[in-house]
Image (cartoon, rainbow, N blue to C red; front, side, top):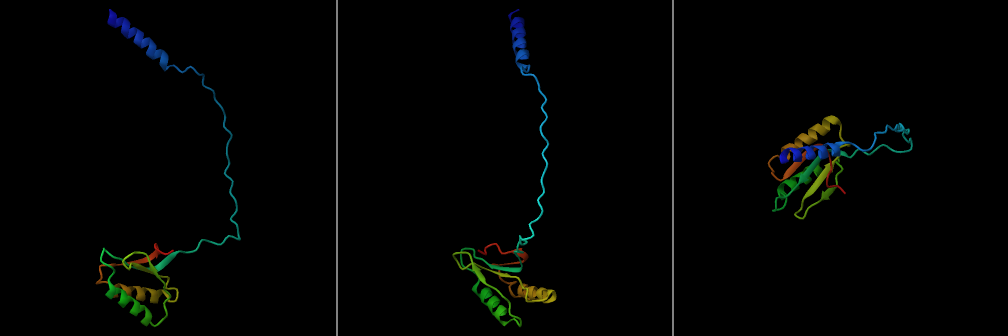
Amino acid sequence: MKIIVFLSILFLFSSASCKNKKSATITSSPTTQQQTTPANPTTPPPADDSYRLVVSFYSTAGGIDPKAHNEFIKFLNAYPKKIAYTPTPWGREGEVDYCLKLSELSTRDQADFVKKINELLSNSKLVHITENAKCVNKH
């Protein structure tokens, strides 16, 4: 008998606590409109920060591959057309990136240049060659 009384009191309290004491009110929220502003014609478009070729000489706690680095520099300097480049050092062990736009070359010459660089540096395990990428370490 005590159990039945206890369960019925428990049921009454639990059902009373589940009821919402506040009445529901419906409010209409004002509609928001997105305003589109015309593009400012005086603002220049964002600069294209991708490079045709990024050659990254990196280290695994022993310095970069000096032989591959020297061959790369010699190739750049001996190339028939002058290629604009600026070395971007970024590490403590001689790590350096060369970010090349290759805008001096035609599309066909760019493909030929990239192929020659890949062949030249294919034996080095401490060189990353990336095409059409951003120069990550450039300041």
